Every structure is written in C-alpha cells, then in structure tokens.
Amino acid sequence: MPKAMIITVGTGKNVEHGICFSIEKQNPDHIIFIVTKESKNKIIPQILENPKVKSKKSEEILLSDENDIEKIYSQCLESIERAKKLGYSPADIVIDYTSGTKSMSAAVVLAGIKKWVGSLSYITGERDSNGRVISSTERSMILEPNKIYADLFFDKGREKGADFSLFRNF
Image (cartoon, rainbow, N blue to C red; front, side):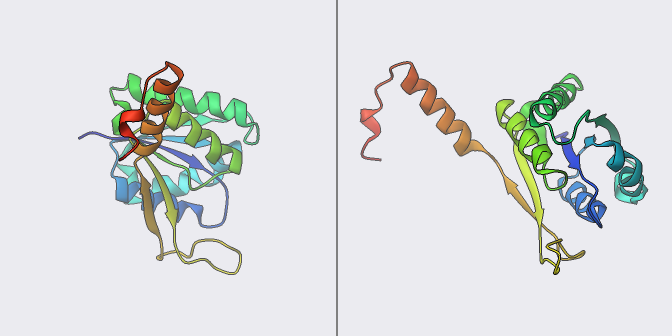
C-alpha cells in the first residue's frame, strides 16, 4: 500500500541518522519534511544524500517560526492536506515527530490526531552523555493511535447523550 511520511526536521547533532533510519523502516513513497531555515540548509542535504532516501519523492514545508506552536500546527495541517491531495488516505500517512523543537513535535502530533493519520513514529535508542541517541542503536517506536480515536468517538457519543451503561461490565 502506498504510504506518505511527514517528518519534522531539527538541527541536532547526527539528527539525519535517526531520520534516515525512520525512512528506511517506514519505506514511504512520498516524504514531506517540515523544516526550519537552518534544518533546510544543513540537515536536508545530508538526508537526501542517503541512497535509500535519494530515490524517494520528497518536498519541504518551511516553517515561519519553529517555536510558535499555533503557526506550526496550521502548517502541519497543510502538510497532511498536501499528502491527501497527492492521493494518500489519512490511514496511509505516518508522522515522525522525533526531530525538531518541542513545539514542532507537539504540533505535528496534534495535527496528525486531528486528521486521523494511520501511525505516529518516534526513533529511540541508547543515549550518550548529552542525551542524544547513539548511531546504530536506533529503534523505531510506532503508535497506531486507534485507542485515541476510540476515546474521541466515545466522548463524542457521550456529548450526544448516548447511553453507554451496557458496556459497564466489559
């Protein structure tokens, strides 16, 4: 099944290794990088040099302010809509929020939940003394947010006055 991937891109040391690892694991057909001016100039070229990434279709969305969560959220919603316009259903969109500012990560996850994306990806691993994941120890943590979506449906039903007492014993 064709897949799109939306990835926040920060500027930390060796951040490109984790991003390339995530891309290799998810194997998307199309990648949308959410970038800052600095990550566009310093990190994206390193990512695109990777042979397993080089052959992928990709584009970048440049953030106007990497610390303004409301602006980032709007731009992340736009990136998901862009993927949908390219023919990807929300279920076939994966978001990787590993890299970037905390505002970038929070905004892309919130946008993903709002738009019902299929999965969220976070790269973890053994950490060095600076708290950075050590290259070659990476592992992918995937969350399919179905429980979150079920909770949203349940809450919406409760708002509409649905009687869930039947389910109390489950």
